[in-house]
Image: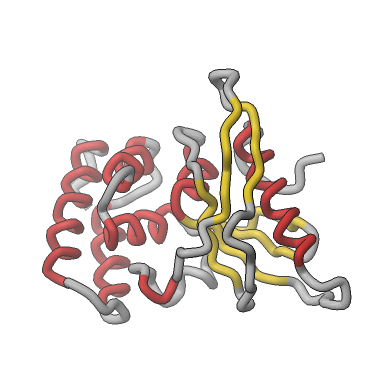
Length: 192
């Protein structure tokens, strides 16, 4: 039975299964809900169903000590078995995130004691701008092509996050310029 909102895909079923494994690792006497915000490729899939990811990156509202080998397998659209593993290296403290990103994340549902949310498209794009490697450019393009991003709002949100970022701000400024050009190109009528 599906518990989470989002696309009804084998990948999302795998995401739920992996989250259920995380929940199963929590002590039985622990009854509080654990805010869990999906980021990265999984969040892109929730918003666009355009691609899948090999790892699940999440921000947990509690400090959880999780094993590094936590994974599930599923059958991809090509009929081949795929692996989805938990990325235990993701740290919100070093990512480019607006300080309100976790609080404003969109609710997806519950998996056991995990209160699962997903970054908004704009906060997801901001996090991609901070890294701008691998799939990041394509992910921003996909979000923009679906009308989920606005150049003015993305510029404002990214600049709001920069005040909390430790790193090469010049590089992030260049990444932001590239991202804004993508958004404007994907939405030719938008000069916002």
